[in-house]
Amino acid sequence: MKCVIPSRVGGTRWVPHTMKSINIFQRSYNAVMTHLKNAFHKNPKAEGLAKLAGDAGVVGYLLMLKDVLTPVSKLPMYLQREDTTLGDAMCMVDSTLQLLSTESIIVWKDRHFSTGRSLQSPYHRGKG
Image (cartoon, rainbow, N blue to C red):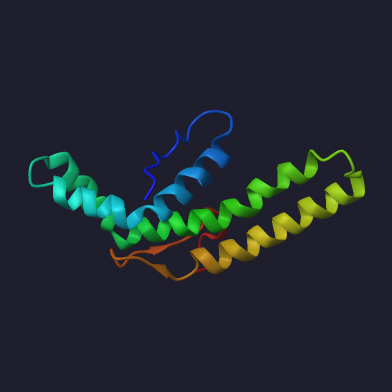
């Protein structure tokens, strides 16, 4: 397996960097977990990382974040195309917003992780 280090997720291009890091973590999850579980006998930091990476809530959050960021990352690429008209741009923005509102309701509503807590979207407070 080719070893790839996740990219830094801060800065001005945080959406593509975050998507790249999530994809790398997802592809190399088994190798990372094996390495951390073997290393935590000698390194307490590795033990903490192994617990964090093995937590179902963390993994679920990363997968949910990937689902939400996918349409967000496609929108600017579409808007920057030379053949995009104003009408096309407005339709794409509207469809992305519709997709995100639908996804956020599906993803956030009744989402339970290993902690047993239900997560609610800040845009849907009091409705779930």
